[in-house]
Length: 69
Image (cartoon, rainbow, N blue to C red):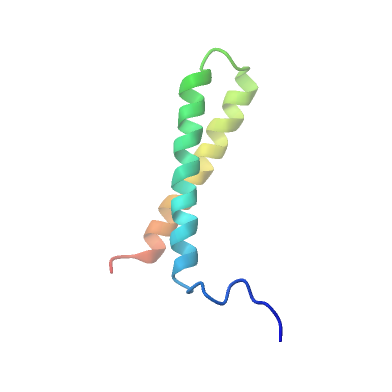
């Protein structure tokens, strides 16, 4: 017998958790950009903006793939 850490997690819970984590990440990046505007280097800000845009595309993709319930 072996331990399976995912035995109690349903298949539908995993995408929901990922979606909520992506939304949390988006909010944190937006807060970082608002706080650091002018204080951080332009390269750092551009990298965070790019990553935030990628996260937002992932969120939209997840929302579209779920469709209406």
